[in-house]
Image (cartoon, rainbow, N blue to C red; front, top):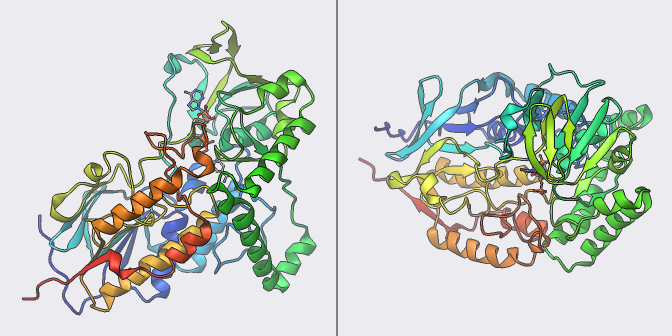
Length: 495
Ligand code: NAP
């Protein structure tokens, strides 16, 4: 397999894989930076990423909406402090239209292979065609491969069963018996949304969660009118949210002994003590690990929902699933019509199942066989001109991923500029820089709250947290400009 070399005069061709939040952002920023030869591939029929895929009842973003917006596209019309999922999906579709990107996305086309051949990336597409690009930006997302639980008898259930990210909207819920397995952010939002609608609601809890109470007020018409008249109000609000989230949360997570973590724990404990009346239920809901070790649940009403007369918190372990429902280890059968698996995602997948082969035919699957990693969450040695967005070891879970995405895209564009300017033909992070980053990251990970003794999707197979283990301020500083000593800039021989 060969790829024709790019002639010195032809513009760089850039392939963006994925049209979720990060892919759209890349497309918009590439356009603004004057790159005209950009292909955007999206495997689904619509853009939107996680907001397209997750449509479960109660879905909302638990990062405030004015902060979970692109900096260049504030939205004065957010309905609530934490907007619902369909509004967020509509926001991304609106932004894509406004910035002229929507018509350029090739939807329904999956990139199945990416191989670095003769200095360019050769892409194989699911429609049988191929493409060649100088640069690949893999904006393929993080939480997108549902993890189904290995529970005996799951396939024998006679009712409807589906993963939370594959919600079957043809299944009626009102007046039926619904069970949800899991107590992550997803399950908690579903619980609050469904208890009033169903005949009976069963929440199967393996691990209790700390819940931070945060109200979700609607913005009034007067407030929205003010945002329209004075967009600088939104700007001020975003700055305040960024300050509060950074100081009070993101920076605290990476220092398990910080006063801010103690304050979060105290707030969650008070929420539990003050808002769960039944002492038996309260003890079932009391976690045995530190707050924010697992991803913190943000909910104004979960405790009220689980105390609903038609709700049951099931804490006995699941023995098996039977045609009529879930059998717990105490021998009890919890009869159900609908079973929702809110059991999370396979978080080590990243760009996969796409097969990526870098310099000298080295497969990313082999490089990542002990677990995925990336320098500053974006670059892997041996994979020149290939950039991951929201890749491994990034500040996922600590902050607004839109803010993370904007920093990452700005960083990647600085490296791509080295190619456009002719400074080099190939840019790749060095093995030495990767090793130094990884060693420091592993050391710092031990001091984070995620390493204080709980099971969570933040941990790798050895139990070490994989997320960015330093402050968000450090991420901002390190991504402001590439340290060129950490990169190999290679020029190709010219004939
Ligand atoms: P998750 O946090 O990974 O939670 C999965 C849940 O399923 C856990 O409670 C887990 O129990 C349980 N579980 C898994 N396998 C099980 C089994 N075999 N038997 C019993 N229980 C089992 O997944 P998620 O709730 O979908 O959330 C994933 C992430 O998505 C979140 O952490 C967050 O980053 C993001 N998210 C964000 C929002 C938002 O508002 N921004 C909303 C939803 C999701 P254990 O705890 O015991 O492992």
